[in-house]
Image (cartoon, rainbow, N blue to C red; front, side, top):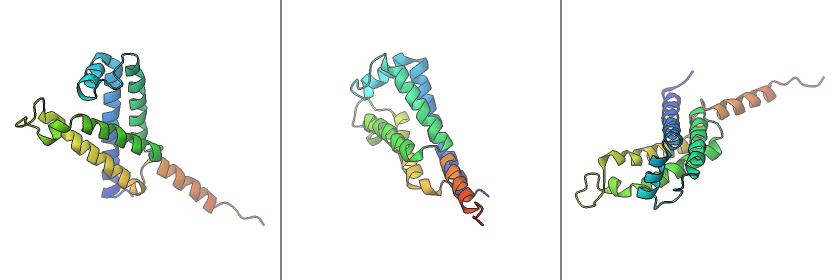
Length: 152
C-alpha cells in the first residue's frame, strides 16, 4: 500500500521528469528559442542549431527515465546536473528576483532554486521511492530468487 511519502516522491519525480520533457520538446519544436536561451544564460554553450534536436531528445529521454524511475543511479545525477546548470545560469534572478541590485533579473526564474532542491530530494530519498520502476523490478527479481524451488 503506497504511503504518503512514496506518493509524494512519485509526484515530485513525475513533475521533475515532466519539466525535462517540456524543456526537451521546446528544443525540438522551437530550436531558435533554445539557441536564445543558450546565448543569454549559458554563454552560448551548446548553442548550435544542429545540437538543439540532440539535446532535446536527450532531455526528453532523461525526463521519461525520471518519470518512470528507471535507471535512477544515472538519471538522478543527470537531473541534478541539468537543474544545477539552470540554477547557475539564472543565479542573478535567484539572488535578486526583482532586480533591485542586479540588472536583467526576472522573478519567474526564482523557482529554479526550488526545482534544483526537488532534484536533490529525489536523489537523497532514492531508496525510499519504492514506486520507481527500477525499484519494483529489483524487488520483483529478488522475490523470485527467494521463492525459487530447492533441489530435492
